[in-house]
Amino acid sequence: MYRSSVPTPLPPILTADLFPEIEQKLIELLRSLSPDDWDLQTLAPKWKVRHVAAHLLDTQLRKLTLARDKYFAESPQINSPQDLVDFINRMNAEGVALYSRLSPAVLISLMEVTSRESYEFHRSLDPFAKAMFSVSWAGESESQNWFDTARELTERWHHQQQIREAVGNPGIMTPRLYHPVLDCFMRVLPFAYHDVTAAPNSLIEVQVNGDCGGSWFLYREEKDWKLIARPDGKSLAKIEIPQKIAWRIFTKGMRPADAERQVKWEGDREISLHVLESIAIVG
Image (cartoon, rainbow, N blue to C red; front, side):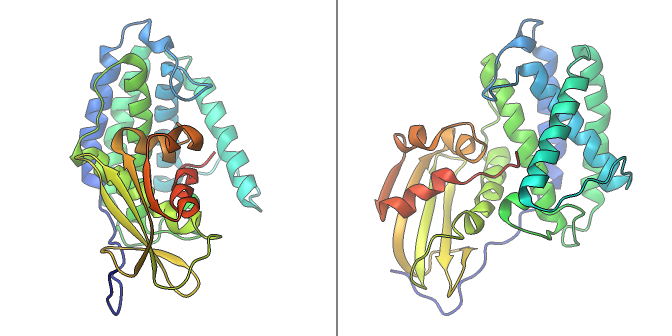
């Protein structure tokens, strides 16, 4: 049992300076692919490598268009979370259909330009100002720029990792790049546990095993859960997740039942394993 008077909240993560590195690795990866590699199946059931690459180009162009240039070609009616999911899924499908028609050489050259502009845009933002788009998978109706930027990093990381696994290329599972992705994914936990009740001062520990991982602590206040920087409260549950599957859990790349066979848990089983149902993407 751990006790303190006021639990310290989990601090923000500043990730804009990681974009040049992760984008350079993506460009190098795409340049190394053979013609056959572009048609290999990825973890995403509907997408081959060329579709994932197209999605990475499309989402970056869309973000620059909307967030940087304030250009809106359409104004959809978003009246519910499902409306948002449907709209994003439609935009993703349209973008993939369009950009997957490009040759690899053309796609890569466009990605080089957009990657540089994307980095410059995120670097220019005040990380603690209000973001144009909230991080909806964390249950937020308003987010700060640091969170939106970190969310973008997770997108660039996990889709690149999908390509790497499909082609058998060594991954980007390094502490410098992967740990911030995990740190961002964990921000979904208070929202994911919204309907899970527990006594105030209860503590859930989520541990990702591996040199890129660490421990995250979910603390129960009177009515809500929040992530805290250090363990505080009465231990209710703990789950240990291998780092090789952690990113899959949060991105629909693995069914909870399959993940359960590879994790360890202590304390309340149901509350421990609820982590495996946490999704940190939209759509």
